[in-house]
Length: 407
Image (cartoon, rainbow, N blue to C red; front, side, top):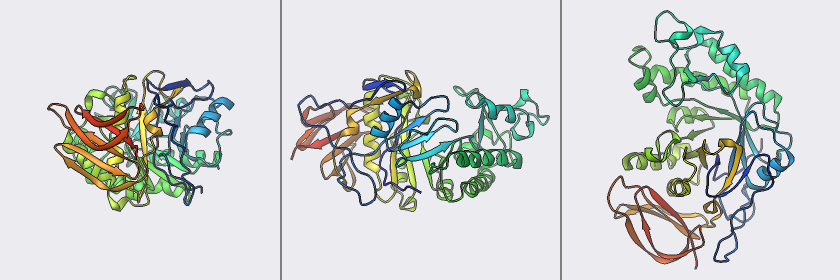
């Protein structure tokens, strides 16, 4: 298995950044307008060369064809690739870490994989229903905007065998893959909150027990390869697997810019990604937006990740967006080229603003829920991701900055 020391995984489709459709030519990072050279790309292999910037990743949906030009972009700019089970992977550099996606654990998708749905749709006993008489009309859909997703019975042996079989088949067909990405592993408390009234015997503990059995079955099928679960870093599920995704790290569900999580929850998430019980796990820490214009949200999310980053895990930053073509575009943000080095100690708070020092820069975040913008004296000279020299910085609520030192 190819093991790489990882620091960032992103799913990209945002503006304003250098953007290209997946069928287009190479994408280039923006140069700093003040003439400062772009930061060199870091060699992330264990014991590898200089460490300059954090690594990146990209999600390749099933329908997309990976052409020579697309492969050139992916191989040049990204280090971790999560691929749909039928995506063409032959042009991907074998040094990349590749995870194969497939069916979710807690819900099924009636749109994404038509062949799978044809099988799932014929097994009414695999679904959860709102009536003791199961039928297609009593299946329970997820709330908007996901009406095409349906809750499944994770205790169903048939459903479990189907999902496990799909991942086993994907790994058999993709021997170069390093592991699998298991979607739809809900937090036990969230599951109980959403479904407990309809299924009073299906509480958080019962769901967690069935969920752990499900994950162990996928791990058995993976035969020593990585199993990464989309579990919002649920501790039990993350420790049962080889890693996990926190999809809503700074705002709910990774969906909209007006759904940022409150500061108290933001602090809990910082503590979670710094949890030493996760040492050695692959943590995909991210957020995202449906709005294509929020470059500032990218920096807020990324800066928050850097505040809580735990160097003892293989932590990655994951950005998710369905805007402007969704996964059909590769966009680039200058903040991802910032060379700030390695963290020096943990983060600290002053006047409601959180900061962490790095060997080559600093990171500051204002996660406040309300109040006036905060102006900081940075006590030094820095350059921001647009190439502007700054010694004072004003941060509105729910914004952050990654700054490179000029010393």
